[in-house]
Image 1 (cartoon, rainbow, N blue to C red):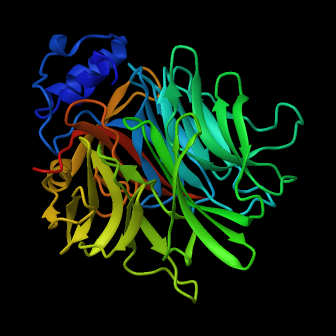
Image 2: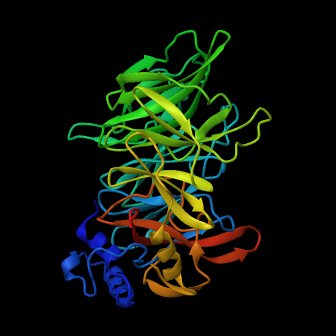
Image 3: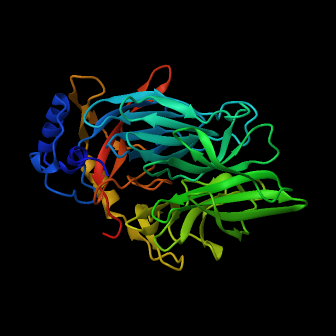
Length: 445
């Protein structure tokens, strides 16, 4: 959870008094508690907006391939442009208190010889004034205080061979003595990848084990997930063993110890990284993801299916919303989110993996209504900060707010953040202005 000052940014919503309050705070670089901020009214109502902050420009027209913002432990916000199909990546950091830094574009997706080519998988963790993302086969660390970014663990510490991340369990574990994550890594000279527990600070292996079975070939990753509450994650891997094609869900704890392996069927046509946006687990250990499979002709399956699984087995279920978009976790529960009957909707997933009746997502509709025809946006990319007015503000991703293949990042009670698009510039290269907006969120309205 960010410090009280950043929560104050989210909670000062509504009348416009919050805009003036936050603008003056940012200009003066003051850090105050929520109770000291005039105009704060408590937890925002679902769909209620905080002060929008101008994050930067991205090279496309809406809808934009972007991930919802995340926040580190110091309250810095991180915005990422790109998705699995967009080989270009760019990230921005909204510094706690004031200012933005952009321009980080590190990825390995464009380098030859990397199979399969992929763009931004998503954010994989956060710590004290830092966050990590996975793009292509690169793992990148961003610094919240400066906005600097650096590809880490790019070479093997002993052989100096280049290293690539085939899979990352998207959760960074932080203890007083260790900052670590679990990943499946490979070098171009390796016949098989290795499961590794990695010390992110020292950039060294803590544990390293070759992929099993040893006779496997053509190892592909279909999807990954991790849950910090359960302290475990899952990798969906497909590989050849002789003439057979096998697909496993392999569950690991955060020490890279195998907890269980479940044989899966029905994912033979799913492309690598086809379980987009990560898998998520409820508090009882039931996992779910969306399978963007393909048919025998290589065309996407429509609609995509919902994969539900635990350590005892798995099942593919037909979605009960017209346009499924992603699996979200909120307050320990899982939801399928998407469009239903032309409106944003969610369907809760019960303990048995059944999809409950779709409900209109009132928080999404309220957010869209609260955007209005104009939006006052705080531009603090350079000081002194100023307020600019955006005409025709709209959700940056998808057709409705909060609909994303990635879960929303909860950083205060009933509060997350979203991205709003503003002015569009069409010069030598199309560009869209994007603003970061804290907002109230709820599912079971």
